[in-house]
Image 1: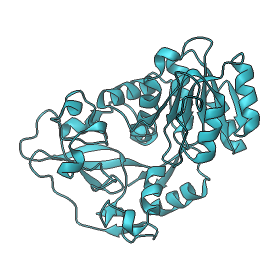
Image 2: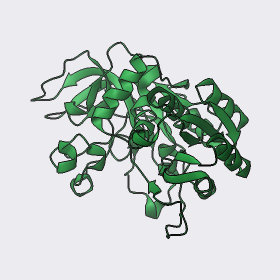
Image 3: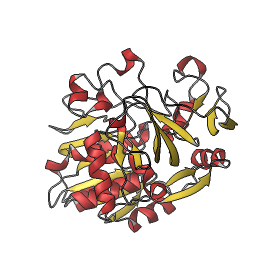
Length: 344
């Protein structure tokens, strides 16, 4: 079968021919119908050799959807021919966090060598993929896998980040989304769908600001110090009760800090790096900084239900598997409008 693999540190991913995998006991094989490209992939492929821990060769794709193709011994509860989405942050299934469906925070995944598809295990950018357990499959029903595969991360991640702040996102509050790209433009829609907050989008790119407005942002401003004054004005001087940073680099962290309200949530969703002061006089009183990771299995069901209701969707650009390296070129160049989806 064909697969897109990262094979050499520092090199571009390659389309190669590899053996079609067979499901072992308890596993499920999918015929892949769609796979999403993500900035997390670009982050992994940017790591120097001493920091890279994901194994080579690595079949990319932690956003996956497919049709159940073959069952391993002992598999129950799923039928061949079912259209499914893949829940990506696999856990052990037995620890306290996993018992609550919070496998993204599994206490033993690292110890047991459990890794998500495309981030340590073979991913979805291939004609077939192996899913370790049927519990990691969520029925798609009549949802189009190509249009919705990115929701397994680009929908689930912002949904999980926003959900913890829902009690604060009341009428009259202001929520700020920094970065209106792949995750941010979905996060804006989720804010509109599940909260009464005034939604403000910030970006350095005018086209992405236009996209933010198209998908529901009440206001869209360039991501600079002038945005701080706008957020203060819109909030009656209070500031943003939730700042969702979908970039996560030092300049966006600093910008978010300047507009955060007393009691506000500063949520670092993007995979960039930076630091923030935490002293008594350094941040608004009762404010918090959170760095959530992906989302819960139950939340993926909820995200897909939002898609079925027609209140969220993903702006996608579709590539064949042969053209998948071009998707990462555009991702690296910042020229994608939304998410890239690879269709084998």
